[in-house]
Length: 392
Image (cartoon, rainbow, N blue to C red; front, top):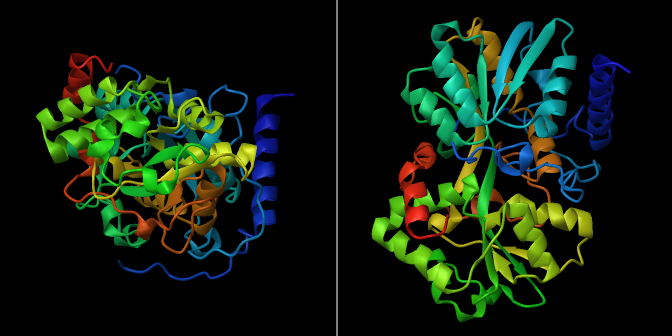
């Protein structure tokens, strides 16, 4: 069987799943309100999206496509796509390939040509190619890569018709990029060992929590962890962050390779608590069932509560800016937002679409003020501090 047959079958599976979920004819269709060192290659497929080759990890984010009513704007209500589009994707094919194929298959005269790599490598490629880059759209796993391209003058302003889909805190203030899905920093904990009241609401107090001695895990090589430490440096200062890193090591913190491993280790009782993006917990629960002794806590108004986004921008080399911006709009469709919720357990950013799993609504989270998400890509000083303290 050739590759094109495989691709077609994959896309047909998405169409069947979407139809079963009721997202081809979505209820509640409202108009949107106005309103280098491995740090980008996490778990093999997506800098923060998981996937990878672990038997339990593969497909663990894919909850059954059951019926549910969702709001938002359907693809049928969006402008048609016609032409060819090159998308540089820092999101892994295992997570978004089906979605891109689903969008492409909607339009007989539209072709999307994705190039998959880490976000950092693709930013470098755009810079190296200069004005000869074939890229039209950059699809990133984090806001930092998008901010880097904007700072270097490599983006075009998105039209208001695209920007109005998500709240202003999930898009660039200068309209250079827009978030498409989100991830919250969280605290997975074992419910056989701890209760919700045992989890501090302040991340800075973790090193002083005796119940965590020898019972907590972290992932210093993981880009989301490094972005979290970067946020701590911004909010708390260099010295306080150094003390926190040293205190965690004195507490006997265990090191893991990625945050899915942490969520699984917590569920297994290997450790009682960890630091991880929220969706890894939901993936373990999806595989093991609701009886697994695993739950999620969130800190408040601090670095431990950082909410980062995957997102997209139109590059300055786009041959058809209207086509490129309309494609980005499709990533904010009801179908696409529900796909993110169901397939990766990420937070949809369009307010009319709810998350899936044991998660609070996005407006009940308490991320800190005063942190520009684009700043979280500035990891050089963070990596130096992690090495200096022996965490890395």
